[in-house]
Length: 299
Ligand code: R5P
View 1 (cartoon, rainbow, N blue to C red):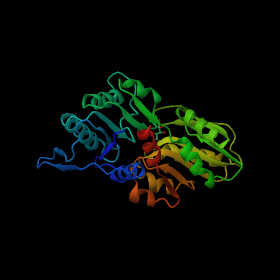
View 2 (view 1 turned 90 degrees about the horizontal axis):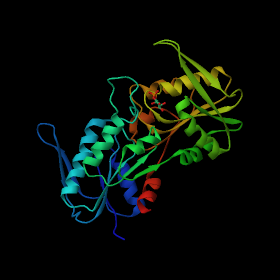
View 3 (view 1 turned 90 degrees about the vertical axis):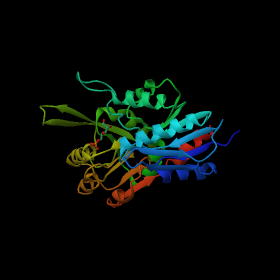
View 4 (view 1 turned 120 degrees about the vertical axis):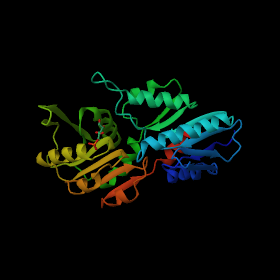
């Protein structure tokens, strides 16, 4: 079998290099820079003719620039006659707009799917899409990797019994079920009811009293969802509260605000580089998904 050729965009080279180490293949040589006017300049410095090529590019931190860079890298690979082009997008940006709630709104998840296909993607590898139905926006195969078992195994050591899994909103039920199954625990979920534009009523369905809690979700952006859930669990008599999620977006003051909340441990994947931001949280535990991605490439 041909060795896969793996290129890294500029969003998360550490993860790309780790995947290469897992597969024992060298990192594909590529030049990424900017033209004087700010446009992205790409040059593939390998012979990719007839090869299966993978491009690792996560779409967080500076999602607009990273998306354009990914599209341009794929275009360069296509024009250099790569046989199969597979973007590996650990965090798929714009996924939260996956339907129209009101007239005048876009469906950005579909737009990004179309852009990847137009740039030449033959397959997509991604992790924990915000909604599984986004797979249906593609007419190419999508390898959708789920991280809940990995994160559950990593969370176990921080979760003393008696413990319970909590989904912070109804949308997180499926994720909570996966954690609960992996850890053989009961689960609870928080239901939100919007009373007015500024008032949201939260109700916990389940019993967290005198239990240690693991709040689980697909992503943490501002951290407000986790913080509100942690405060409600605290009010309902929970003991220690921890959070586990796949994508550490950590926008705005997320790390600072979560540090001030009743949250002990944060367990998250390295789908997005966290560097200094995660270090701001004293019990942050970053779990690598490089092995999961490498396995799916091997398969
Ligand atoms: C929402 O549907 C998502 O699953 C997350 O709960 C949400 O995006 C987290 O955002 P934030 O951290 O800003 O509350």
